[in-house]
Length: 346
Image 1 (spheres, one colour):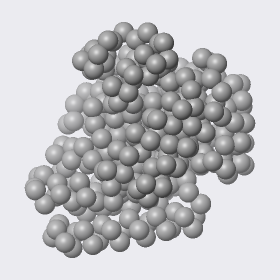
Image 2 (cartoon, helix red, strand yellow):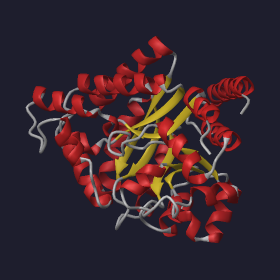
Image 3 (cartoon, helix red, strand yellow):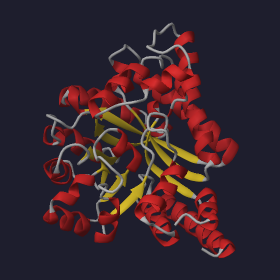
């Protein structure tokens, strides 16, 4: 039950978000302004039109709209603006640390300089850190549908951008027909470069996608991973290895990955002992925020302060920060939560 005290705890608690896409966080008004500024035609003329676009029946429709809207972002300063707006929003929600994904192929295929895009985002996030103290780092989320050959080009840029805040490497995009295994060599190179490894897997494709990600790519974090619940052996192995699932409940409903809150396996995954975290994925596209995802986790899954604390600390332990910085973050978040729980009596 979402009591006033628990709601205040959710609003004020220090948070860590590990699964959020920069392009999917663009505010509708900003989207329209950038479209006008950059001469990009959109199938929407006003905020109401954008809201109408953000209605999908399945994952394929979501990807189509995502790609359409990403076209308005064409310069490094556009990325700086988006990063600053997202970062300030996260800071207002008491997010101490976040890892934000950029989808490189959405921009490379339009002729953008990827390093310029990353540098712009890094500039926006750095300004947020100066103003609020909230730390934000970048992960590149390569669209698996473009195949492994082009991924090497993106990985080269990721390595060059590590000094300005790139900490993670991931594959995303359409799981259907694009298994993880062909990307094994790319992931091995990313690991050698000391990038944190993540893969979207087990969202709309079943356990085979998750097995491929953990066995062949060697990831210790999965974007979504909810279909792991369908294979008891896989569930046991994920728990044994300490693989973390970055779960995005509202996203799963909005894309049709699950059909109802009652069907969503987050509670079962948590109760089984899987290390899960809660995230917003694409806040604009799914009409949510990290704070709202915490609220919905109470309303629909019956989580309380103990479980919300555990999942937040899971996230603090699972960041791609260097070990010493990760330990500092964990201590900061844990201390803040302990103090707040004592104050609120939750």
